[in-house]
Length: 159
Image 1 (spheres, rainbow, N blue to C red):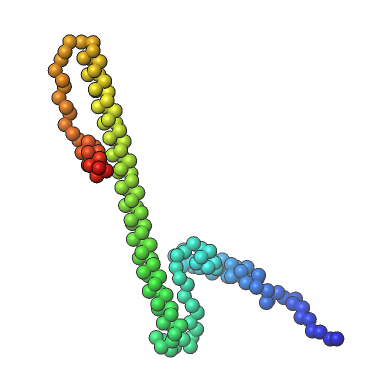
Image 2 (cartoon, rainbow, N blue to C red; image 1 turned 90 degrees about the vertical axis):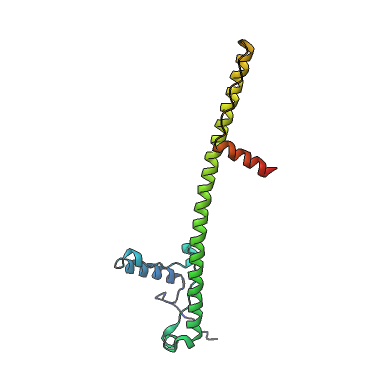
């Protein structure tokens, strides 16, 4: 007959407030921190950071040192994060090098295209002269340049 109901007048136990309070705390702290030491209330995933979060150790685990399972777990996580950071830096370098190579390939392709147009234009002019004027000796073949050598090597590789 008598059932107990609890009314909350302060919303202290409302989980929706936790996000608001954490954000306010971060903003308050960041007013006094240097730009390099700013804190963020969001998870690494929400921040877009590729890092494994550590777990809370507590003062007892810290006092135990390396004998504590929590401390050992955090040591392993930190080592993994250093390796992940190193791999991310290596991937960034590889991507930048790939972008440079693609730009160079595009430049060489454009050079090859221009060179082919020049050759076609020269051939067309020679044919026009042959049809309209007296027979003249054939012009000497121009010496191959880097683009010609690249194109020959590319065709050889395709074959």
